[in-house]
Length: 441
Image (cartoon, rainbow, N blue to C red):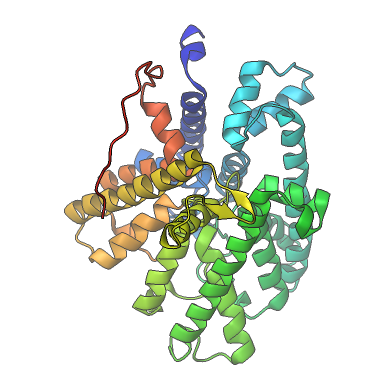
């Protein structure tokens, strides 16, 4: 207990995720967790548990055919815990049991939700949980109706399982094989999955702001940035996919115009945060895959169920570049000046994240006999916790999967938070050195 008190909030969050992953590993190693295959090895179970908690959606097994109902329930519970955050779950349990939330606990919640202040964080947690269950319940009901004609009463289980997986941006499916692709032209299925994934990727603070204020002019600056950037990325992804895959016989060519647009919107939306895929990723053209990697690297928004460097980071960096080109001293977004510390943090996140992807790619190139393009795609996918299926992970050695686990954990917790958990922070120096002129570029 004394050691626990000496840990900073970042270390406690990292330790909490690690603990949940280990518990999930033990449960998935049980014989009752699988069907038709031997019990999972420690590395395989650890990988599946980490992928679930980090809501990555990367899987080395067919969830529908190789996992029992018990194993599938374990996975979806891990997904739910990972998406909401361990601190959110523990706070709700504390509130239910009537325990007082101490200041240290509030600081942990503040860090896990990426809030500026501890004020109102407990109330926010309660709202987040209610909001999550609302989206998952409504999505579950509609998906149940979609699945009913094919699966009968089992559709209830499938409907709610996939609703949770979608809102949490996990991208797991348990229909088995490629059965989910049978619904690629079902507009209701597409719309529900799209709304669940997009809402989960917007972030709880943004959703709350939308529900409370409802009008664009009243939205906070972060909400405006997230909505604008998300819209632009989905629009760009849709246009690029539509153009680049239009005549591809293995993807969009067999569809009519409406179906082409629907499939393009679906891929553009899912590529940023979720691993659901209606098209064969291995059949996409290389330019499309390259743009998908860009979307994956950006990911979701702050305090959301998505990974990546986040939409706000991209917006701040582009605004800073635009201000520099125009010769302006201040970086302005929606008539608000961005503080220098925020610009510094955004650039740090971008550079460190790119470095992690680069180093991961280099390591996997050294250990695996897999083409560079596929390895690079997987490195971006695992860091951004997207998990688009290409089958490459199945070919990798156990040592490579261990590296992937750490990369997924970095992507879920956040690269800066992960670094702060590992590095001992020193007190701010009392001495400030004089500024000088540096030549750059």
